[in-house]
Amino acid sequence: MNKLMTTVFALAVASVTALAVPAMAQQIKGDPQAGQGKADMCIGCHGIVGYQTAFPEVYKVPKISGQGAPYIAAALNAYKTGDRRHPSMRGIAESLTDQDIADLAAFYSTHVDGAPTPPEQLGRQPDAQVAALLQKGACVSCHGANFAKPIDASYPKIAGQHADYLFVALKAYKTGANTGLVGRSNGVMAPLAKQFSNAELKAIANYLASLEGGLQVVPESRFRTSQK
Image (cartoon, rainbow, N blue to C red; front, side):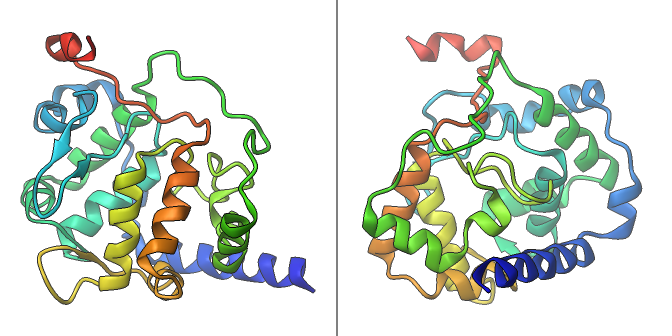
């Protein structure tokens, strides 16, 4: 019965997400080379290893190199429409055309530097507390058994993502997009995140960040000295 319910849940989420992505955006083909030429606005944050944003709270900006193109496009569209609230990202996303978004998504999905192939199964098992939290949230139903191979490319890979970013993102789903400077509106993630205390969300985020995944920060050549 649990397996059946998990399957039904995953299919329901997939249908909701598919409807949420604009049909026109789904039809536009992204060009990685064109995206590279448009990424100057991105590399100042996402192309520096360890770069942190200081507003509205301090956390590392997410690793986006190696992330799925449909997810990157969906995220940018969400910032553009206001389903995700963040002052800096809203301003950037609003300046992008659908073609720009497709090109940037295509570029960053392939912009990797020898990223390891994540294991099919978890390399590090969670402790009993975190395992119970992951089961309660049905996280594998969408993000995959290894959290690096989601069942739909419009869902994010989260294994190996920065813990502090994951924590802030999960809190944003609890907040919603109707109040404050930051927040995220999502019919699936919002009710899931609201089940947990912030301490529990932080425990989930810390575990996911400890896993091996294919996400990277690939430094732009002008920033490579920041690794030393």
